[in-house]
Image (tube, rainbow, N blue to C red; front, side):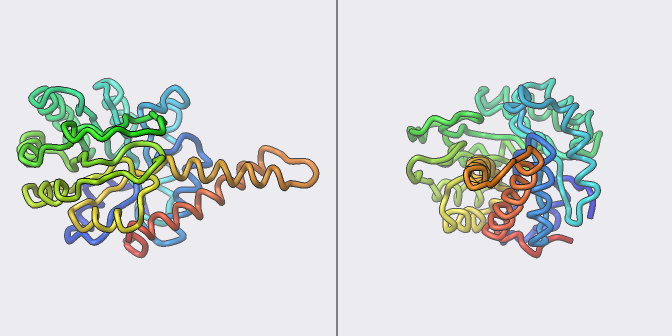
Length: 287
């Protein structure tokens, strides 16, 4: 297919029924594995670089590779900048050619979040870039792997402010907080689906679930039923693939080379992503 925007993906999913998976990547092996998994089940997919991962690889280093791989993919691929908390980083991602960016002002006061998000949208529209933003805070921040998650409903998205935020900012998608958390869960979270349902009833915004690793399939399906059209996924894949590579290293006979590890990683990512996208019901939805 080709490189597409997040808006184009939502335009193909007007009636809902599935969510597109957004997978964080940090090197070319991860990019190849994610796209191969999407191609395996004929699904659109989003490959994302998070600002939290910039100490490992910069926007300017990985962005061109992400874009090139997306252009050569057999399925629609959106190249997304995830959880951009700094204005400068989000603008850098747009300049690098990312077709979608997330400005995360969720820790800011409501009016400041609206103002900064709207300013990002103004720039993005001129460049044909989609914008995701967040209202409410997840119980565990991006990049944090603490095992215990303390529920704090006071930080969740206020359903009655969601539509105001969506309309005043002009964003493409709204990330909402209702009990999910980044990282792998030590125990099953308590998700406030009544809140998500109300948000969906009060706003026309395509909704985004962050903290999608480790939930049960029924949780994803209910989230999709209540307006979720993009699900972020990373930690579970990262852990699962690492364990598979570890197993292969322990069982390997004779010499092992880095090229072996690379091939194992790509294959394990492909299989995990194919399963995950099928769980999100986006299999067969490529155009």
